[in-house]
Amino acid sequence: GFYYGTFLLSGPVDDESSQGSDLAPWLMNAVQFEYGLSARVAMGVVDVVGDYGRRSYHPLRRGFADPAADILRAGLLVPGRSVGAGVVSGALRVRWARLFDFWGSDIPDPRGTWALQPVVEYRHPLLARPGLAIDAFGLTMADLLLLNNGSPDSDLAGQIGVALSGGRSTRGGVGRIEGFFDVYRSTDTEEREERRTPVTLVGLGGRIVFEF
Image (cartoon, rainbow, N blue to C red; front, side, top):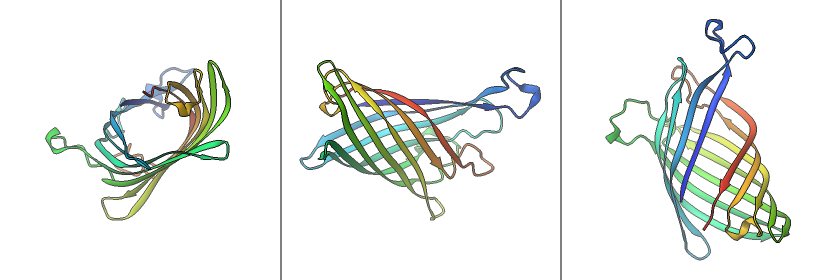
């Protein structure tokens, strides 16, 4: 599979001489990308999963850092298991994140090269009829980091939302559209070179998923 995600980060401008306008003193601060290739192989009770990705942060204003990393992940996924009327699935992956040496870049390494990434998802069918299926879902994700200085840290995320597909439940392996509330907490987004930049974000998200 192939995945791609991007975030446009904007916010208030603290320099009055460079405001976007008097009515809307906001400017685009940065654009962040992550994209990569993923693979999944069924092994009976569990599936083996892995991917290679690339993450980069491109500041549009002074004062921001430009962290980037190559990302390798590998682990095990437990396919959906029925729990009541819904389905629970989970995965546990190990992540390595650092720029490969052949890039010849002097960008600082991410604060944590290694991470353990547990994911748990629950899906509950709300509607199943010819031409339309609606599922509610919720998931939690974590990056349990081993920092480069040897101490532990963590980034946490969660989503709750609704998935729509054409004619079958989203468990059936078809294309679907998902809308969700998204929560993300990090003790350091690494957006500043000089200091830690913690953040807690709550917002709306959406994605289109094709499964074959």
